[in-house]
Image 1: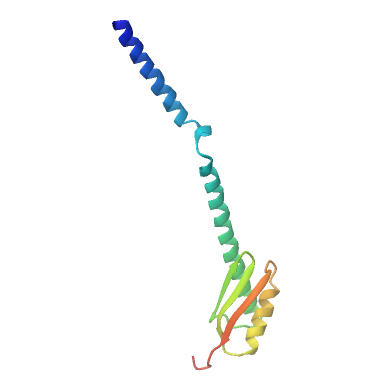
Image 2 (image 1 turned 90 degrees about the horizontal axis):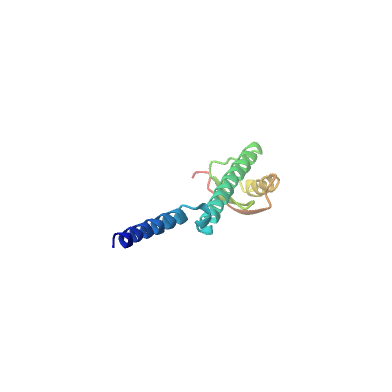
Length: 119
């Protein structure tokens, strides 16, 4: 009887050790966790690149003589959208041309509008 009891305890201990070692095995981890992490890093890098391109376009507009106080630049996957308003109608086309000339910009959607001088 004691032998049977000891064998039962040994069997339980063996099973629990084996089960515990399987869950901590790095190979046993689901493959989704590694792809989710790489997806997170690529999304984070894409956002960073979009913000940098937006800043570069704003700087180019400013250096080109366009008042950027009423302009918002949105970049996504190297495509740029100009939003907001300017005080002179000629600045709408000028801003679009300056944005197109920025290295890395593949397309520009110019949604700038003309605002009243008093606004």
